[in-house]
Image (cartoon, rainbow, N blue to C red; front, side, top):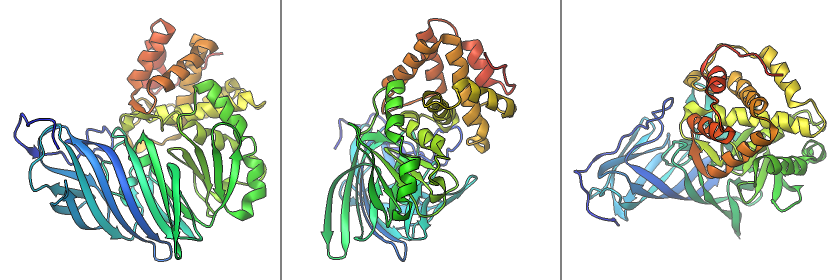
Length: 442
């Protein structure tokens, strides 16, 4: 289906993206509108069979295009219902349709695949589909999405999703999205989820395990959790103030951007919690009945505004995710009777190193603690510079104007200057663009 004839000769779409840090992930020549995934999973042998139907629009006349897909066996590829030639190696599925695609053409790709999913090795460890002691989980940031479905794996190419997931009936299945149906057939249950909001591939997640469903908090935003039954009492303490955290962030940042919020606690330990679209995943080690890790509860919830709804256009801008979520930790502490944001800022200012430009930290330092803590310090300095009322109005406007979109550091600094009605370049240059640590405002 095409909107008109192509104005240029068909050529291959790039099998790389323009990302400053991870160009090997993502592809050129098209944009994805919708993923429809039908998945069947056997927990014991860790066996996944899937059909991915991808609706996309070409941005050039295409003789060939590619998708990101790791070590799963591709059995068949269709383009607009017709068999297409393909090769699959090096994490790229390269597809040549029977007929070239015109520029601005709407087209549909169907990929049938199967295999044993496993994480993708990267400089940050193994990322993606991971087996648990009993079940599995997906932690995809930043390169793990191709471990379980073919995709255009770049944060800027946000799309809607429908995921149908079939597994043995005793297992709880949680997929990022609104649960729309469940149907049991014999020993298996098919769970169907829809994620209508534009979503980056790395923010899609699947969690499978022997979990118990509990209410996370009441209120007009549905909040629920899937947890090991043995952790129910400790979970009630550690997440007991979640409704208050949600209310606090809705006041500070604006409306919650999704239809629900789901927390999953695995029965295994995790090094760090993981955010997904409308979902956060914690390990059993993050639940101790003493609220030891409540700052992480706040951090992951804040990502629903900053990182998930407002998504970075390029991995270079990662401080917009992690600095904002870290500052949200300090804000919750301040609002809940703990140390103030100023106290947290002073503590971290005394500890943080001063050898990184967080506006461009480099791929090896994307998740360096400075990106988190100095990012939060930047926001605290901005708050001190322009005052509380303008600062929080700016955060709400940022979340509203870029809701379900993508943004850059330059977008934020420009909006901040517009909102403050004065030049803020010296402040942002000092905090974001220079490795030396500026003095902390008091």
